[in-house]
Length: 538
Image (cartoon, rainbow, N blue to C red):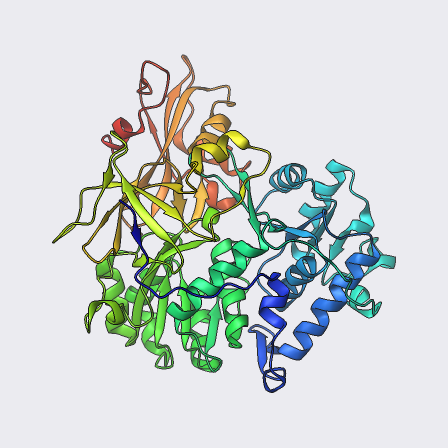
C-alpha cells in the first residue's frame, strides 16, 4: 500500500519558472538584496536581478535562441550564473547545466547529447569550454564568456555586451507541464549519464512543495555553497530562496575559512550543506574562532547524514539540523524533515535525524520488496521491513532524454518512480534510507557511476579486468571510489599508476582513490560484477 504525505496539499500554479518566481513580486520587495557575491561583496537587488534576466533573455532571442533550443551553462556559483540561468529559461530555451569540474571531453559529450547550440561560461573555465565547442563546430560567437574581454578581443561576447544591447525579453508561449526548463545529467543507477527532462511544472512544483517545510523567510540570509548547476542547489537554494524573497550569500566554491567568515560577517541564518561540510563543522578547531550564532537551521542533503554527526553540529553551533532525500529525477526533493523538526506531525517531538523525513505535499510513497514485488505496509510500531522506495508526485521528471527504455525501467505505468534506494518507514510515514539498491557511488554529493570508471580502467594496456565500488574512507567517513584491478600477465603496474591514469582523464570528483590488486573479479553466470562480494573484501 502507498502512504500519502501527512502535509496539507499545496496549490501549484500553471506557470513558467520565471512567472512563478518573479511575476507577482511586490513593489516593496524589489529593492531587497537578492544575491550577494561574497568575495567582492557586491549586491544585486531583486529589481536589478529581474531587469538583467529580461535583458539576457532578449539578447538570446536576438541571436535566434528560443523555444526548442538548448543552451549549456558552465559556471560556478555567482550572481551572473543566476542571471544567465533564468535568462535562458525566460527566453523559452532549455538550460543544460554542466558540472564546473568537467573536462573538455565531458563538456562536449553533454552538449552533444543535449543538442545544445550555445554555451555560456566564465573566464576561468573558458579554455575547456572553447576546446569543447571547437570539437563540435559551435561558432565562436555562440560561446558567451560572462566575465570575458568581449567579442572584439576574443570572438566571444560577454555579459556586459549582451545586457548593453537593451533587447526586451521576448514574448514566448509554451505549456509549462511539457516544456523542458532544465536538462541536468544524472547517472541514474549504474549507466552513463542521462539527460533528465525536467519541465517548468516540475521545478515550480518542487518549490511549492518544499517552501512550507523550509520555513524560509524574507529576512533570512542563505549561505549558498552548494553548486547551482546541481539540482539540489538549483531548486532548494536558488529558486526557493528567490521565491521567499530571502537573500543568497553566494560562494563559488567551498572554503572553510570563507564559509565561516561569511556566516559571521553577513549574519547568515540558514545553511544548506552536504555531509562533508558537517564533518568540518563538528570537528574542525577553526569553527570556534567565529560567531555562528545567527544560524538557526542547517539542512543536509545530497548524501545520507549520520545522526551522531548531525547532533554534534547542533550542539556545537546551537542550531537545528534537518535532512532531506531526493534525486535529480525528482527535481530533486521527495522527502524532508520540516524546519520545526517534525513537531507539527509528531506532537512536540522531533523526527529522528537518522531519517529523511516525510513525503512531500501532493505526493505519495510506497515500499516494495525488490525480491518479491510485494508492497510493504506501514508498521503499527517500530520500523517496517526494508523495501525499495517508490515515489509519485508532480515533481517526477518527464523522463530521460532520448532513452525510452531507461525511462520505462525507472517510472512505471502508475507513475511511480523507482528510486533504487532501500528504505524503512515508521508508523507515521517517516522514511529512513537504509542502503542503495543501485550501485552508484556518491562522493561529496557528486554521482560517480562505477561503469564509467571500469570502462576507462579497462582501456589501460596493463589492466586485464577491473571493478569499482564505493567504500567508506576511514579518515573522512565519506564514500570514495575504490578500484579492484586484475593485472595483465607479466606487467607490474602500481596502485599509484592506476590512480594517475584515471585522474588524467576524468573530473576530479570521479578519481579512483583506493586501488587493490586481486586475482579475479567475481561475476555472476551472466557476467554481472558481484560488487557485494567485493565490498566484503574491504
